[in-house]
Length: 353
Image 1 (cartoon, rainbow, N blue to C red):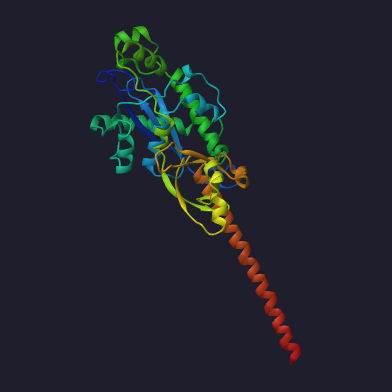
Image 2: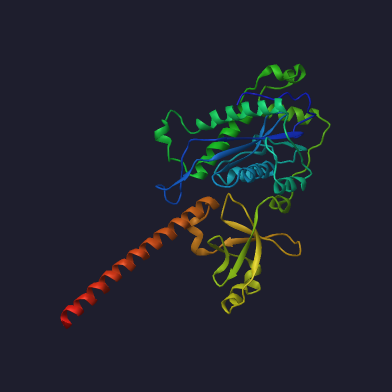
């Protein structure tokens, strides 16, 4: 991307963000079974309009468009050192100092009630773009789409790159692109104030730092973990003797063990709980306390540990494939048994006659 919105109507960084989205032709492979294809991802980027810093991102395969945008917004609020480390990338805070809350979020679509309420909890004003801003956003998305299509190429052909990356690897590529863009991408000088041009290099990180230093506007503090968890989707799970059953997987937590939930389920006492879950990773879910206490982390039970690190889309696809293969094997067994029984009955009939 090599375009910048005019900052003249905005007082400082974090005044206004926008979310740009683009699809890619990369076919993402399953990390569990590389022969299985999960689909083509959509990339959502959150950009600070004043500095053009990319402050957050999300790669989605399945979840709805608005959920994908919300998860990109959640990532914009997150501290980036840990986020990058989870992808195997080591950075300092100076490399990616974006973990605050904007005042206004520019969306190219009318948000549904769930998205509006989620953003309202953070005091973020949602604004729909005017025709000029829509045109500018379309240009950014076109440029973004071009950049994303070239991710990981390094001279390789499209055929060589097809089905090469799993979801985590593609996310790593995207973060490397973001780090390069934020710290090295030269922006168009004709939209930069003369005063700003005298004090900064025309790259997003320098505009960001200069804007924060020269502005009297204070940054809005990063939200707490509990606040950020409120952005995640919620669903109902069942207590069973095998664990907290949720979308084909089983979890456990301290409360469940201490209160003997699974033992009680063994003798027929069934109950349900509310969980928050992160579509990006199955490793943990969050038990929502009825009394408003901090959510409790629930971990996968041991038999599912080989699946750690998978997204919910990948896990559901994998479990559905196993179920399909199991059913196919069962059907083949049934046919084989019926054939044996038929031959045995037929032979018995022949002997009796």
